Length: 146
Image 1 (tube, rainbow, N blue to C red):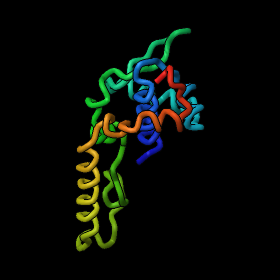
Image 2: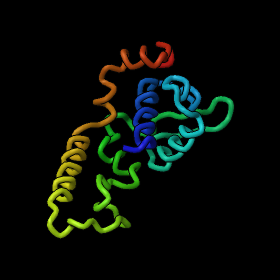
Image 3: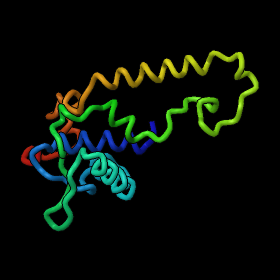
């Protein structure tokens, strides 16, 4: 997975752990020790996907746009990943490999990728945050904000 997808998942986990409140990109950046600028792009992506709502201004921030049980992890990964090429031969613009006509690896990699996504399709954000209290503690979310 790309960092963008990784950070999108982390941001959703953080926001869901604060489900009853609004948080800022700065809150997420501080909790995970990540780049604020990169997280701003992630928040925009999540907003464009309809997963979070963003509000500007002094009382602004981000919050979930849907309940955690309605945020499918497999769908999120598919939406945030640009390319699922596990090897050069799987890339649309990849060079032809000398053994392509006889190679069976590409098929195996497609099968592995399909299995990976099938597993993620079984889960939602609600499954990830079942241990919300522990996550909140590790992310230093104060109990009143959670």
